[in-house]
Image (cartoon, rainbow, N blue to C red; front, side, top):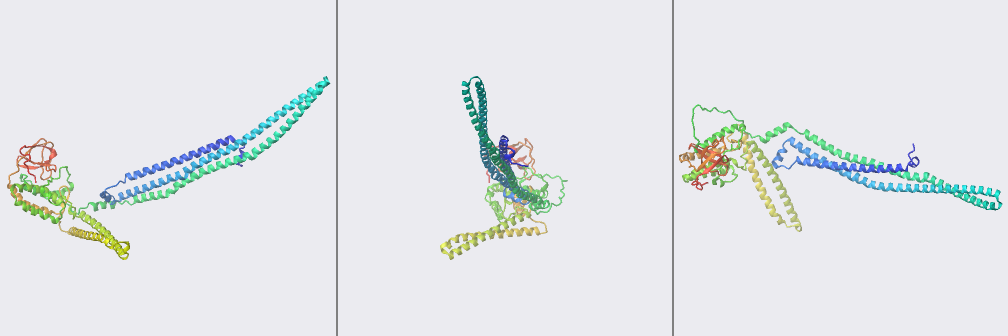
Length: 587
């Protein structure tokens, strides 16, 4: 079947014009479709990247180390990274759609409109030419017809006059001859116009129209082919990113498959294992003999140590309270001590206690109370360099981590030293490149840094060997334990040593008179004292104030000259005596 527009659609000029206009509109609509799809891909990529960033925020070093320890955290982090790569591929797809299709189709549409306009202008000119030739033919035909009729009429008039009057007949014959000649000339014009029109019509429908329509047909085929290429390009652009997206999805699947529940549960053991033995059986305590024992300053430390022994066994099952922690009151004495004393620096406490024994009774009593309130923080609350505040297993891991970091720093310093030595050697061989003596200060710094790091490494190795020896000892542990709130205490010998030293002071202190009351207080809320040194009270109870709040949130009160203890300052309303204000001396 023939598909030549020039021969098959020679009389469909208007329909061809409408069809090509609709084709250009379709091209513009397809271009808009690709553009909007590119915008959707770009928006999708932006949202995916934002989602990945939202759920992969910057964490502290501790959180980051914890996240790297568990397979499910590592898998999720890998999934987020792959999701970010997927967003990158979607952005690339959007960019390719815009540059390779949208921009090119927009430019081609403008060219197509100009070409179509030119072709249809040529068609209209050809149509106007054939129409003008047709009009000329019609005009000559009508003139020839009119002249023939006039000539025929003049001939009839001439014949009638000849029969009636010979004189007028001559004139009529001349008029008829003139009309006959005019009709003959009109006939010649008509024949000429007809011949010209037939020639123009043949040329129009067999030469001009086929050429113009063929150009329009070629233009339409190129437009359709361009749409086909655009569709292939868009599909190819998406196909191009699919392998990368597929690899990202494979990586996500691998990350999911890499999750190991058993390994993660073992990791929890490695992270939180303390190295302590499970608590033993609780001994029977005989309460059949009623014995009321008042809380005094002399028995305060003994009860505290005894309660710590029981609390250490049961600490995993004790529910912590906001006010469970015993009060820690700092004194001027403890402010003079170093913030993180190593174990060897605990001896000055004994020396300081001996010095206190030679002071006056009042001063000794106040200092002793301050020591009792602050010694727990001094011994256990700091973070010593040997990590003795940690449980054995955690201490071993911490020291091992520090040793690894120190070894890395030593390696970096050695590499820097070797580089400096090579630089000095180059300067010595080629003085024009630099002064060898300029490298010496930096070499000296590296040398001192290496000495410091090696000394620190030896110190940590000694501490690590001590921990290993203690953990490998099958006998009962003589040090290590948990405080009443679950905190670890490394060296009980220091506490026992302090207890033995302070018991002497307790005996003398018991002989002293109790502190005088400096005011009264009214309890605003009920408080249940669960720790040693605290005093329970009910709402609305009146108590005597013995010592004001030292800034730690606790106030020392007395009930009936027999029971003393600490209560939260926020739980009471204090009324100090005017004579007592400013008279207290705080150490």
